Image 1: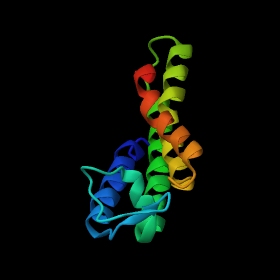
Image 2 (image 1 turned 90 degrees about the vertical axis):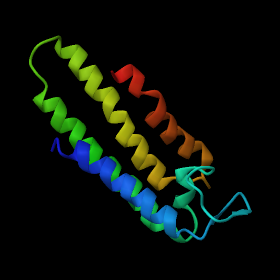
Image 3 (image 1 turned 45 degrees about the vertical axis):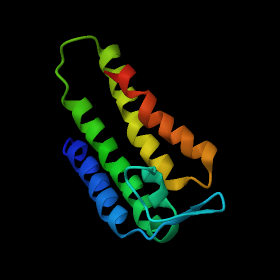
Image 4 (image 1 turned 30 degrees about the vertical axis):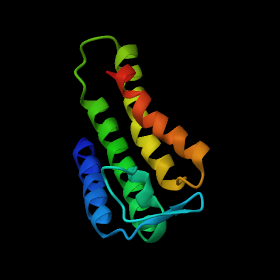
Length: 129
């Protein structure tokens, strides 16, 4: 299970690179954005348009793999330290993959839920470590 912590980011990165290279663009809030640029546009833009089903699947799959990796790593943590601290850290680390799954289901067309997923990814890691 701990290998999911490696496989998840690999799946996500490959999806981003490959789909970013072939994306003809996407429509967000009625505006056509073309071509996709990894420098000036969010990765979430690949979750819209022709690449949507593949990028959203990559978000969900990488989130599930990463979640399995977090659980696998939590199970193998050394017994030193306080149990509460290890449990809290593992729970906070698990919020990132949950955020990836949320982003996979709620694209930029559903901004409130999409931004909730993004905040889980971006805001919880500092607390987890």
